[in-house]
Image (cartoon, rainbow, N blue to C red):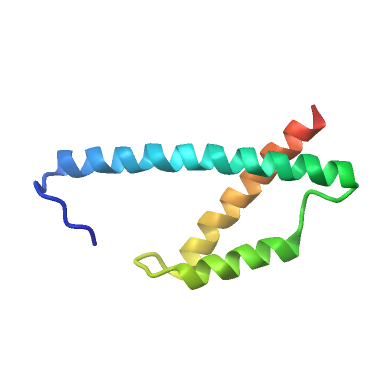
Length: 95
């Protein structure tokens, strides 16, 4: 667990807010990439959903997980991220 100077609830919450903002920026970036993939798939006549690719993602991220989140939690979080970014890509491609 990270150790950072002054440990007050307010200070820790401020750091959490910064992490949340960074995560949100990364999610936007990921969604943009998914939209690009979706556009390429559309041009090639491929389907948006690729179960093999999603299994590959989950396997890779589970291997990278060093805690403190359980592997099942990491999978749940990333399944939702993948689902939502895929849905964003589908919406954009259908415009």
